Image (tube, rainbow, N blue to C red; front, side, top):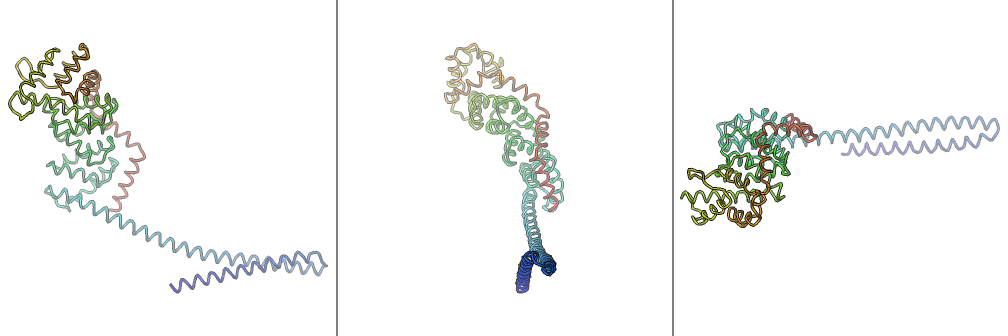
Length: 398
């Protein structure tokens, strides 16, 4: 500290000396100018003064410049050393935090699998490569796969479903946790194979590309509807199409539409289970008879020729074919009896726009590869490239 203070004092002294010499040079130049009006002796004197002034000015400038340069170099050296130290300190801290979070994520996988944490670390490069390809953070990839490991999936299943889920997250604009929940709801609800995550992402992507409903809208609504729709014999593609059409038509929230379709489907399902004597339901035979009578009045039957309940897809399709022939009062009557008073308006909207649902069903049925097509567009964005760069930098640090 004392040495640094002495150096600063020395630099200030040198700068003061340079200023004094510059002042003296200015005085000599003034004297030289005055003498130029005199005799030859005055001219010689003026020349001598001018020469001395120029010399003193040059020396003052050199001394001032040297003093400034020394001071500047000292300051820059100090700043450079400090900046480098802070940069190293910052990166060490970030690396420590990254490693700590990665280790925690690998530990969550180790706890539900046969692998140790060290064995999971040996697969770090594989996860980092996945993250780079998907434009995601490595730790998000690991945490998403951990959620699938916790569901009992093996490594290949978990990694494949993680890839499909992260694409869904990107297309839906969601975080990995929400996307994982939405993907799981669809697959479990419709009892799909665990390698059908691509099918889910494809259908949502293609419907969102052709309807006024986002991927996230459809996925959110489906999370509330999947299980009950499957139990009613509806397909994943058709249910997704109903949801997309209702969101588009009503402009209500995905949560409201998902709950609405779930309630409508549940009403029919509970009628079926009540008649079969397999459920503790609020509906009794009288309620079933009311619904059956209302539908039969417009030429639609809940049961097939063998007395078995038909899939709800078939019931809705048959009703749609009769719908436009009914007057509005009859439509309201059928909607109220079939769906309940609270869901009457949404049921009417669903049936009024059934042709649109059929159109969307065609898009849903022809959706293979659509998620990859949409994701390829995202891969051209600056966000994707910056995420890739960030992942590579993290991999370098770790």
